[in-house]
Length: 77
Image (tube, rainbow, N blue to C red; front, side):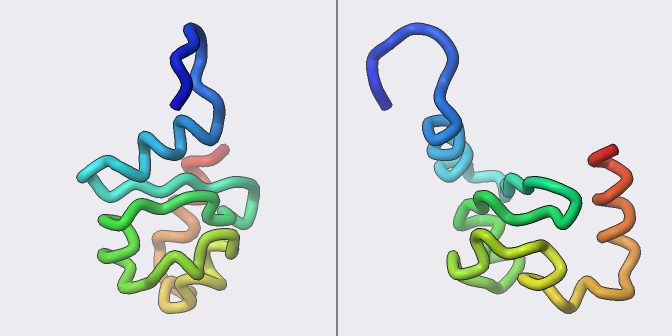
């Protein structure tokens, strides 16, 4: 991260999230494309970083038919 003042860039913010001990992921769009997930979140999901860039239900097909995807979608509204 640079030594400038002001807001962090998107990349810098994602780097901070990736270092968090708390499971954290960042999603984008209606399909909840996984933009970033730290090691703690990947461990919970039982996945590796190859799922970055995938829609949530493609990366975690076991969620299909579960209440979580709809709850997640509503939280984005």
